[in-house]
Length: 624
Image 1 (cartoon, rainbow, N blue to C red):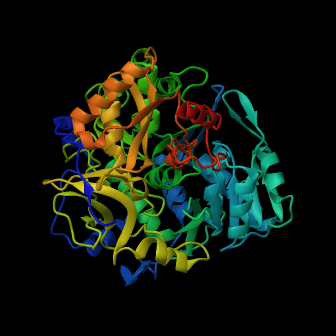
Image 2: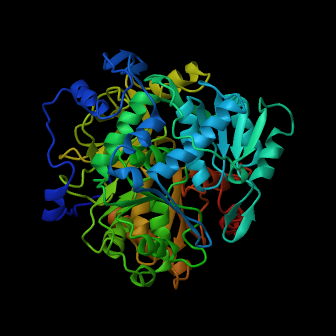
Image 3: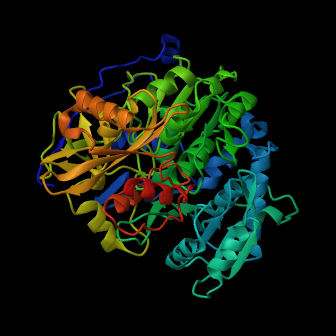
């Protein structure tokens, strides 16, 4: 990191929320003079505490303790608090399966199911506070019930995405030393059964895990009225969950989040960013196996008393308009999804959303990776019909909740720009030597501790310190970003993916955005290939919209377009046309696998991909 990341992409378009939206928004102004800790104390007091906290923050870098004397329970704040209000009979969860079957739970019904499972775990299996419970399940209501049941009794839940292989699950079971696994008999994907329970059985078959009980929750019949089940009082700093994320060494990192600080930020950010109203039907499309599903499908919306949409299936089954069908059918008003999905929708054509009545939508969100400007514009025009604000959110598994975005009732929206740090969050773009960048590109860092920050890596504090706190004295996010004169941040992607071309450090997001700006392009991913002259040459992998054909002439046009749009230094050496890009089932593009292809290395682990067969095709086309 000898020099800074250069800013090449210029995006001047901006959009303003409607006057009526701004007038009715949950947050209409920001007190810039308010003390940061006082602000967070106010947010924390909106939760139900069995015992009030006294100290807001104790900070001994890099370890934070928030609201540490306080006692509360996350499940109680998501369920019990609503049973004494009008929300008792309000729908908490609407679930639709792949075949169109629907199940709904009111807050009272969801509370009863959570209490039943919590009682079973305690009384029948002996699960107690601090024990680890792993959940490996499809996107069914029992997954939400299982998470909240663990939180209710104080067990630390570890949700493992239901698409991981048996060996990946075993690694996580071994690291967490979970003694109980909650699973399901099977799931479905594009009409085909997924052998969920078989994967669990294989994962524990080598007898090298600590698992004592496997509970198949979707066939477990629990009777009785458990409305009197007492939620376990948890200290604010007691761990709530472990969530494993990929590590550069190959060994997954068990990110630890605690109860009080995490829940404070989850409730606050959901209310402020999504402008959540009591009448909304809120749909976060993320799987609960990822942090977005934890914070913005379960804890954030339920602590605010929302009606949450939950869907088991894919956007293209049985047809490519499935998401628009779900929105129309259930009158979804807030829709939060990933840029990869948005680019797929673009590829499939404008006529699919046009078939459906999407007038119930009033706010859109984007999460998971930077969204390129053209995808943002398509989302705004074709789905939001030029009337729904878009909140483009930047955050990580490690941050626990949204760090940078626009507040929909206040800020102008700029395509490709995530926005500004949320109130209570302090961020900066830094030079490699730690000097702040006032305008331009650099390394994104969070400058002050925040309540939902990770509390460490499970069982490996040394790794926690080295990964996140070695680069700067502040938290280093691992992402590159630019900041403009108005303080708006554009996220450039992982620093590991930054291209170094002839001494210029170029963010992948800018090159990819210029490619997607070209007519007919649906998605693009770029990686660096070793080059004797430039150090690295840019290789682009591109998928086209339906009706377009990749050929030499088109490749030349696209290379010229990139050169004109952001500069000759950024033009690709080659463009490989492919029907799809390697993506995880959560929608993230695996550039690491594309790097393996261009560097001539054996293809790495593809078990997390939703489309593993595409790697063989990409490799063949690159070598041809």
